[in-house]
Image (cartoon, rainbow, N blue to C red; front, side, top):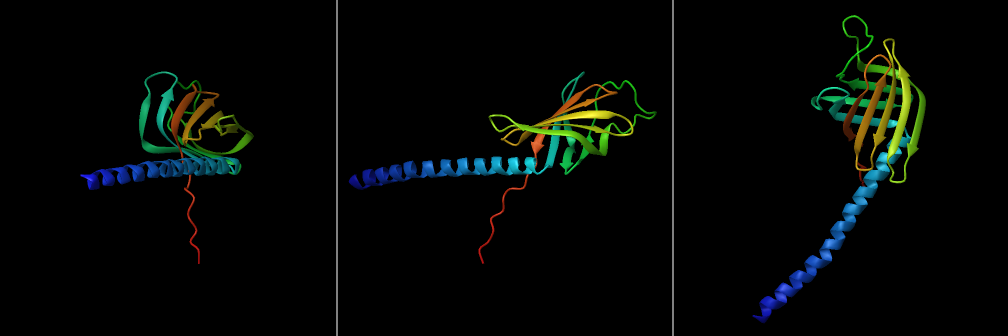
Length: 170
């Protein structure tokens, strides 16, 4: 009887001492993730894979294909679908939001919570666009696209980053 009580007391003490250790590692992992995201954003190495489209008209659309927006150095690589009204487009529909183009007027800001907001303009032979990317510390990202000749559209997805690798000691 005393042995089982002693066992239960020891087990309880062990469980209580393990819980704070696991919460510290979660907090450390979250801080490492936030740091990695911030470093990539500041280095203009941004890749956002979108999974939901929010057109100005019509229902929200869950995307099943891998669509993305990528910024590398001074260029944007946009591979996004378009749902909405086009005011003036080339015959056959044009390329829409699927293009590679140089970036103009790039502006990066961080708010108090660490959310990065990137705003830039770009131009293709069909249209000119204003992109606004909001990258949250959790890894979620919003992409707002405002074309000149089409209705605006928004997307939601994930910021893609490589988790820091542990270097082996030799």
